[in-house]
Image (cartoon, rainbow, N blue to C red; front, side, top):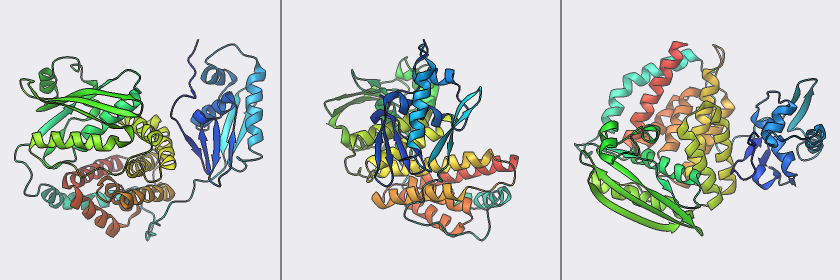
Length: 435
């Protein structure tokens, strides 16, 4: 029997224009406040059709994805589709329609445009930015590169740079793996933004064939000077993070650490751990964390982070949907807004780079990315990521002065991150030149 592809117990949220689809709650929620609850199989069929992204799903496809391949009559699929069509006369009117393709199956067609951008408006460039314009802009960035890198390597940074590898953490009994993976994925990303600290990417650390061996061997394999491993347990809303830091080349334990607190205070636990790692490396720690976060929004965010670390393009829209639901659940969640801006930017870039030659960037997508980044920086001004998103998006739009100002703001917060932005821009420009 084939496992059902669309499950109700997963923290997944989907969006079609003004309509948010929450399979776990069996709910459709419209931006105007209307809501409608559907039968489990009906909303699972809707989720399967949305994820098909306009492709036709046959009856057998739906049976596999929704009913797990069990033998059912044709009427079950027909009833579910008929119920969905009824919603298009009410809460989903003008949002989508379901087409029947004779002798083939069903296809969902989105009719609603993307929701309007939030808060701030992007300045209108003098002309659309083509690939040639981006290549020229990248050339200017290459000329400015040494200056930016010089600022990034300003005095005060440690002469010896420690290199941290974070190995997969164990999940305590009853603790969601997505929460643990998201938490661990955050650590090398945030540690790598500390001045004077290098990190091994989460994907490399997690996939290391030596991950179950002694940390000294792992350090040698990954070129790390510090290795962190541990366990995360959650029980009754309380989180316990147990860790140990080992040094290379001998793998000796430098310290062991245990931190407890409400799950909603995960970022305080994370930043406290990063502060201790930074002290061991002789570098400055991270800024203080923001306010507690809604637990459900936090799980959505961490699930998105864990999927984002895998780096598969087909997961991009699902990751954006998870973050969209996280900020809908907790509008004051600054780090989720920052991640949403970055994901929207990357999705816009993926769409552009796979489009025919001469295609310009989707302005609405870039505007939405900038709006999310602005929201994040308003909520938590110490974050660096929102300014990196704004700088890149403004550059793609040809708004060079705004891009420059955003880069300067990023430099004020983290020179290393600004240098990373430059390298990313140069890599993307090289892709553009190759096309």
